[in-house]
Length: 395
Image 1 (spheres, rainbow, N blue to C red):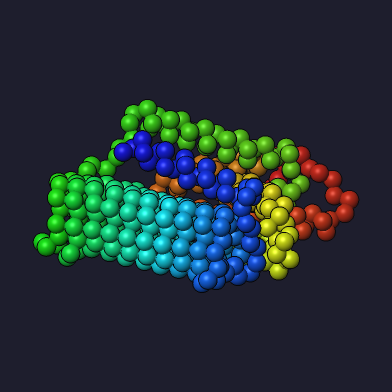
Image 2 (cartoon, one colour):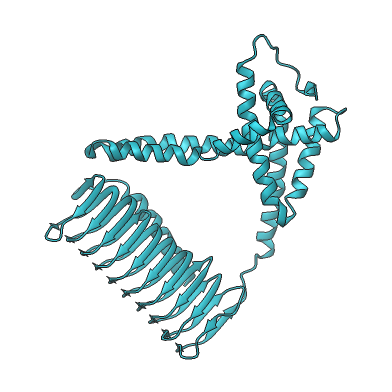
């Protein structure tokens, strides 16, 4: 079963990549709202890109859809459905398989083959004639799945329908409600035992499996990775004293003098990785349908570049904050010593589960803002010589 999971995952991501490239012999539709009318028949594969995709007629082939809000299939698709969108609703018939990445997936109609989804919430009230593979937050199975059901949900999985073979999932919680029928085994991994109604039918065994534990080699790899991560973080922070001493000094001063403005600036910086893709999507949505999709593809590297720069900024964000904190504790020592002191305290606090999230968020936000405020300060200065890295002080 594990082998089938791996193969399915590889196939899903491979088909997503393949679906992004237009193929010969396929129809392409790019518009704000892509609609296949009730009496309309498309006798080839359809690549659809739009704010929403609504199939009310027939697609005699595959449907590959990228949508900002919803992909709804109320008609007939004779091939496979591949969708990346906010929501997928299938209240018609898909004679092939469904593979989707979405915020929510709802199968009200019929899927003749497998359903493979990565979604926040998945609901099956219709019929899946093949297997159901789910990775996401929650699963509500009130319909029927004739094959296997497996995957993982962080939240609760509820079963009140029919499963034709085994159920095997890792779940946050499992509820088997009245009317549920499982022909095979009901195996699951969960921190708590399943709540199984007395009227539910389980043909095989009910098995609560032990949570998967890391073997000694994997734990050693994780430990070595953590040590290397700490060394890289400390080494990268020290390198900034040579690579950007002037910017770092101004960022440290921003933490000390204008920390309130730095926090506000840091908060304003947080939406940047989301705003840039949103602007690209808006531009592509308002462009001519024939050029919208190629235009969006051309701007994808820009969005990736912005995301990469932002990730780098998050990594270096703590350096001025930790330097300022360390020098506050040891005002007579060098900036290097201040950073190492602050970094040591910071790394120790990361071992405390209840406070590390808050401290990490505060340090990153203040650090991002301090770098921006320091850059503004640098542009406002004239004739200022770059000091030695060791001269960062409280003055």
